Image (cartoon, each protein chain N blue to C red):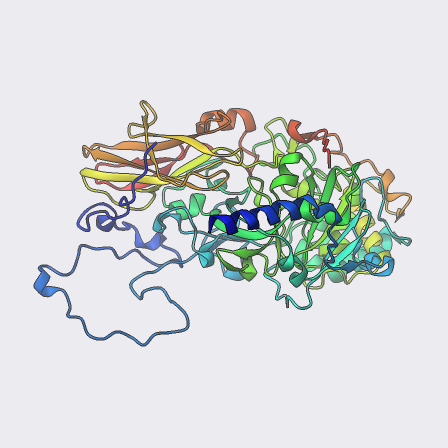
Length: 423
Length: 179
């Protein structure tokens, strides 16, 4: 494993900058990638240096940068009115490093984004405890805090490819329901000790203050009690409303919907509540008609973000890069195949490589101009290897809907066009 | 510097050693009355179900007024989730997951309706109306007779058709913790 600090400085006349979208019709609200060749031919053509704009109270993105999330509904239901969207996807193809910009962190909301005044918000902790407490946001901020860099992933990430592969999809469409941020808040175990949890309590109900009152039963394993956080900070600032302002539960490595946003209640009990979300919704329908329940951990996963769906590459040098993550812990290896999973080469992992967080990988590739397929597969510290599509389908059938972590294949045709395919 | 750091480190260790006796004063005790306001969850054994009752017949009128616009007449054909039918489709290529075909517990229906429905006015249904709408949806699925009625005693006793259709992930079948 090596790291490289200059890996994002690709020569401007090749690599990322030379790629362009080949079907503008498919480009969503995120906007287009312009990225043509440099407009300045010689140094004499580079514009002079006039005084710049006045300093401002808010650092906006450059007018030359177009980044946006993509609101979508269920599989195949794209280009929907934002009012009908159920999630909004992160533009993984346009991001570098491992941290997702705060405003681009993916969102899944079940009843819109509530407008919560932190001064009026309360967290009730009760049930099998010695003393039930009502906490304000200021109470939480006054407690000992931790900051952790973790991914959150929607269980539906990858669900576009369960049954078929739409060739017009970008990596934002296929994998945009995962993001990595730094989260700051109070360790759950501190709150558990504060209220004096009954040792016989083995499950905790977490409930949000949104219209749906989304609630999930959370098993109180050692791992979860040690790692869960009641978070109020996101990348150094208060949570964004779409990510649970003023407080949310953070459940490193587990289903996105367990990371209850707009958290307002924690109740300790000794069995799961069997809420709608953990019975009717976030369960995995198998081929035999039975459903897996409480499949809570997010699996070992990876995806090549560049080159990826709907870009065009040129023969010769190309740098392959992408993200890997696992709910089991650290990523230890990412392999890349540039011949449709026939042979594999180990990619370089960029530091830092953190537990339950995005890991950036990259590899140099000399494309010979012939049609081929590029694929990545990751391995985590527990020895889990990201399965190929065939293995996922053999185990889960095609109706499971959630937890699709099959290796993502991008086909490259003779013209250099990159498209989403099943394998 | 290093001496000062050691002193501070020492203080830190000392304070963490005595922390069990530290007088944390975060928040305030929750009163039983205010807990009642928010303690709305319902478990499969019926714990949490309030006093009250509702009939299928009353549920039909509540449904037509408050639910039908999204869920369609008789629980299907609406723009939002289908509530009826789908039995024997779960192992097919196009499974239809409804209350009747998929939901394992009838108590979940009460819990979900009272907390999340109707979408534009969650929590607005009375206890009796909630029991009634749950009864009506169950009757549409042939799980409750047309003259049926639900309350906190009868609702948990209903065995849903797909009650045994779920397999708990091995890792979370038995939870033990030392805290």
